[in-house]
Image (cartoon, rainbow, N blue to C red):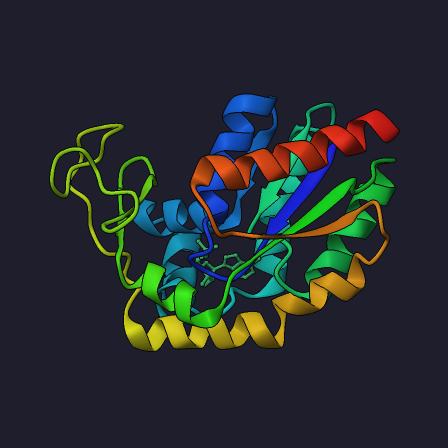
Length: 218
Ligand code: AMP
């Protein structure tokens, strides 16, 4: 089974992707984490993509497609959760073509949504662990010890693309490009939209319900 999780930056995709991977045996593919790891490793590819990731611009399609293709080809027999890919209709078409070549399909596409004001508020309050990629919100989900990751003890930082200017650009790109995925994946059983209000457990419960309902109808 293959699932896509999409929604505006700051809506909690990464937190939900973690919960799905931990509780439902999906292997998670996070394009944002994959790209940030490349940048941190200072590889040739990382050096090439750094300016896109730090300014909130989309990394060119050919580069992100090679990364997702490698992951899909290596995990053909595994349940996969895609987070942060696809982000445009062109990327969705490329993924559709790849899956179809491999005799696979996209099963559930979940849009998590929230108002722009709330998204903005969440992003400007966010702490990020540069070691294990855990995300915190200093209001609603603070770390147990001030500015220290609960998971691995690393000092939390603000992601370089969580500045106000870059957040505005990321939200603009989301509205112009990523929202169109809803029309691309418009089959009733496949595309589902949920609101991100409530605790992370409440949002996860809604997601788990949709995934179980899909599995039972197959
Ligand atoms: P995220 O962690 O999902 O917010 O992604 C962080 C940044 O990585 C984005 O602002 C883009 O610069 C880049 N990125 C993530 N996913 C994609 C994608 N599917 N296509 C192009 N660039 C991406």
